[in-house]
Image (tube, rainbow, N blue to C red; front, side, top):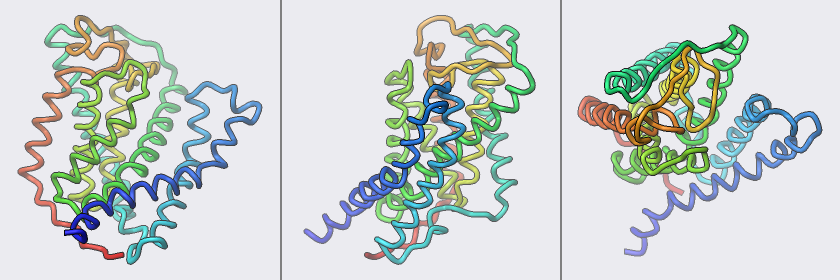
Length: 281
């Protein structure tokens, strides 16, 4: 009984160790933000500088985890070069379609009005890079070691749900965050987890994350998880926040909830996800 309890608690222990490793490895990056000229930059520009460095910190933490808990390699954590560009591109198109469907539903229901926005080509290209960096960073943190240790011990359904909930809670400090936003971002995290486990690669998840944020902010002109971005269009939410998304964006709407739930149910039946090979200490 005790061995069984320890077996099911071990993923939590590993996750705590992983987060500690990430924090320790990222301390030098945190110090950079106090350097004059960097600390005074807008948050968007600061993230362009710091998040690529934080990605290196995550890789360092992943390396340490392979040394602390064996036998594993970094490639075990869903990091795949095979067909990477094709999978990221395919995922991006899927993420764009999902957000366009959500935005279309809000428009048809009268919960948003769109007007022309103003964005230069330079800013358009800049935000592609920005959202790509955000997507890679968040997926490296959320869909590599976190998902791996959950899926190697618990049933796939539990691993997907827990990983999604962690992903949702990581956004809890964003402006305009609501209980419905927590549900929707958690559902998005579950969707990304399903694709990662099915393909054994985070490439699709990175693309979907990129397409999701880019379409929501730059194409449709919504806030992205509560943050403002310039857009080709400008979205003006109408009505109650849980219908329109309010100040959080499409992710704060019931239409988004419905689309994500239906998609997850469809994929859960369509995908046959093989269990991960068990790794001993």
